[in-house]
Amino acid sequence: MKTAEKRKYRATAILDLRGREESAEDLAETLKGEIEALQGEIGEVSHLGTLDFARTPDRRFASGNYVQIEFSAAGLKPAALQDRVRLNKAIDRVLVERVID
Image 1 (cartoon, rainbow, N blue to C red):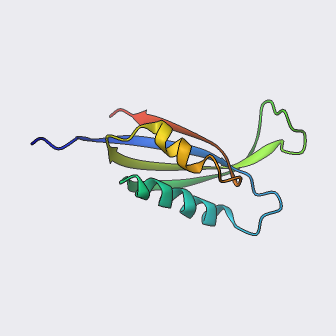
Image 2 (cartoon, rainbow, N blue to C red):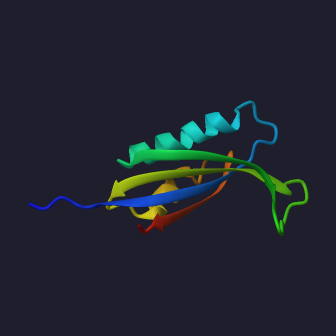
């Protein structure tokens, strides 16, 4: 039986650190744990720092802390990762892109 080929992905997350004791590194570890729970293998992690939003519906949340995680997984649907982190209020948004070599 043929095993599924691993594909490379990049997850870009916006972290909401307002009023939280956790650091961006702690929340990145949480996100890495969610990826590993979906049988993903973590690659490079980049902390991009705090960036201002071009537009925001909430004036009190005009910027966010960005983190990018590169990983590989077989048969992962990006929506599965978004569903796993949807209830975590500290992770505002996650964009998962497939990286083509």
